[in-house]
Image: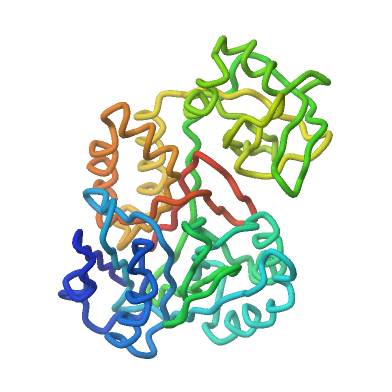
Length: 351
């Protein structure tokens, strides 16, 4: 299989699609003002071709902050695209669509991946999708788009998750997650006074979450929202660590970008050696696939901001070209199998 990347900084979809012939699966990354028109135009250009889309920035060798991006797979791909609706209430109501699509595409663990773009309620959505994907051990990579809208097959949806099932007909697929953080000291906290519906973290070890965070890192309240780039929280998930970013300060509480529950065990994280971590990811992928045909990734908006502030974003994209054709989305939350994480990168590599 092969991967196509096209972009137009002016939002001209036909310009972005130049050179794209006989695609078998398309991902649309658009801007908020043109999203709906781009969805319609894409379907008119490639009628009946499975497609999903969201509002967000795309990247290849550079980041397209505005305009429109198309990322497509062709030449050896079997794919289908669909949507689960009412994700804030009852996403399970539509799970039969995913089950039928798995059957239709002939999904198998070694050669199929699910790529999703979600409008919100990500943790619940991933749990729901996992109930169908786990029966075939299908991996998932995806992220959250902006403005609460996604698209599938020429239609725009709100309160939904759009997904594509992509089967590599000429080789394997494998998914990866990258964490550029490590535990800071021996800080361990028991979360309490949480509000799961609003992602509020009220207390850590019985004390104000805001005051605990400020006290350890010696930052003002105004600095908390930028300090989270360097020092997010981490939640233990088996042998893995799921990153939890701080969204805002609410009184003495912290509002996060993902759900925290009472009695969750949290740790404080700090940046590791970012460049060394990226090189390790590249080497892991190359070890599995010496010459991958394509890599699609989702990078967190906070990683993009952090890398940009440190003058590393362009070097990061250059480093990733060691894998060949690498492209992706800057998301507002990252999906890796059944995990909804922050400040991470998840990706799928195709043999």
